[in-house]
Amino acid sequence: MSKLEIDFCGVKFRNPTVLASGVLGVTASSLKNVVKNGAGGVTTKSIWLKEHAGHKSPVMFGTDHYFMNAVGLSDAGIEKAEKETFPEYSKGGRPAPIIANIVAGKIADFGKLAERVSKLDPDIIEVNISCPNVEDELGKPFACSVVDAAAVTKLVRSKTKKPVIVKLSPNVSNIGEIAKACAGAGADGFCAINTVGPGMAIDINLRKSILSNRVGGLSGPAIKPVAVRCVYDIYKATGLPIIGTGGILTGEDAIEMMMAGARLVGMGTMVYYREVEGFGKVVSEMEEWCRKNGVKNVEEIVACIS
Amino acid sequence: MKIQTFDTRPVALTIKKIVRENENTNTYVFDYPLGARSGQFVMLWIPGVDEKPFSVAYDNGTEFWLTICRVGPATKELFKLKEGDKVGVRGPFGTNYEFKKGDKVALVAGGYGAAPMYFCAHEAVKAGAEVDFIVGARSEDLLLFTHKVSGLSDVDLHIATDDGSCGFKGYTTQVLEKLFKKKKFNKVCTCGPEIMEKFVGEIAEKHGVDAEISVEKYMKCGFGVCGQCVIDDSGEPICKKGCVMKYSYLKRMPEFGKYHRDAQGKKHNF
Image (cartoon, rainbow over all chains, first blue to last red; front, top):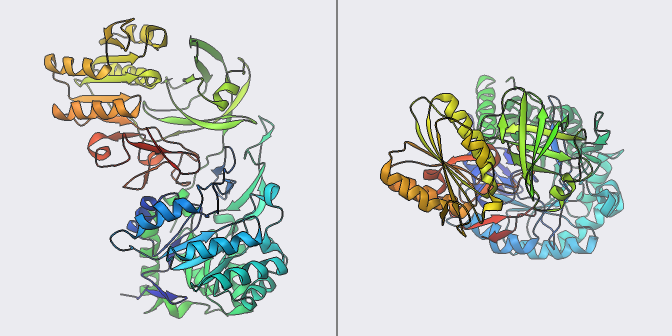
């Protein structure tokens, strides 16, 4: 048996797979079901200070090669996380670590959120400054500016003792520079990447963009090479722990991402292609790969190409 | 590891025909080999407006129907469309009802649940089952599909209205209780308000039948990814593990018959 258990920012994960934010994260029971199906950890859907509507449908669709979404970060607000999601997820003991993903339109709100969400005792706080689906409302994501990314990180860092990881955007000219700035502002690690683009797809018979938001983030198999490269760049720039996410569907994909520098691998769109049971399948495939290749502890392969 | 892939982009379809069912309900007819089984649903995209889930009311392999009640902003816009206009359709999605020869089936339909239950009746008869179709509404003018159901052979139609303006004065569940006293059903299927469905499940269980229930939740993706329609406490998405689910499963769900969630995931009691 190869050891898949791995430590991330001082938190122990039974295996390196983590549910990425935005997928199957509306309720505590949904998160628990993902753990039941094999995930080593889960990330909540992005939590806002107040209720946030999200976009009208269609908000997502998939093809053989890529997936697109513009859900628009719908959420009932932090009150729901306080009253429902965290207490229910924690009832009878947490089945796996939970990462609280927070999002805001104003830098100051990230501070307020970090303070409140810390009281819920999340294992890690993930700061979402990189959603490409809400630009009409919020402008360019903070993750696209060295200054803004560092400012958000610094504020969140000052409001919590929990490990803070920053979710970065691939849609920048130098992701390593952004990561370095966040590391300098106190980030403990990163999650990368958020969706690519935004992209656009048009139904030529209806002469309308398919997503109601017109544009949406690209995910799925097509973006894996971009994600692997970004993780490699971030690792090289900072050496900090990374949740590598983007286009991972199989155990082999997960191994590749870890070789680029990820300690954990995030999966969201994988659920579209393999259903929620895919978590367990990916874990088995990782285990099998490690066994066949004489890897006793999965940690050995992290950033092994660097 | 090779992964089987698939496409869920909408297909643009022309509305072939619009049939007025009652003041607030239309049936939209499409020429398209959707291949839906009874109980399945599609996501209907009204371009520039919104996309919503609807049960399939009929599918013969070359043509399918969606029977839609005007209840909110999206359906209000849909009702402005005319024959020849185009919409987008994704699906079919979800689980379905199955029937076999010799089945003794009770179908219990409440309100606009009559449309998908009609599709069930059609499929059950085709499979060689005996069908009792119980349909209920608040009053006679809100009854749906009764003429279509009575046109099917091997189907006994039972009507219940709250105000007694047509058929039995009372609820569909009371009719089901009465029928169970006379007949031995081996299959009970239902679609309608969740509270009614819960009672149907209880009654069927009392008579040793595990009812199959169409569950309705707020849906966005239709394929088990967005997590909007997950049910407490199993946390499973209804669009993927349902919509047709067994009562023996649903009765263990504290959410069933008690509350539902909106587009932001906030709870609302029934």
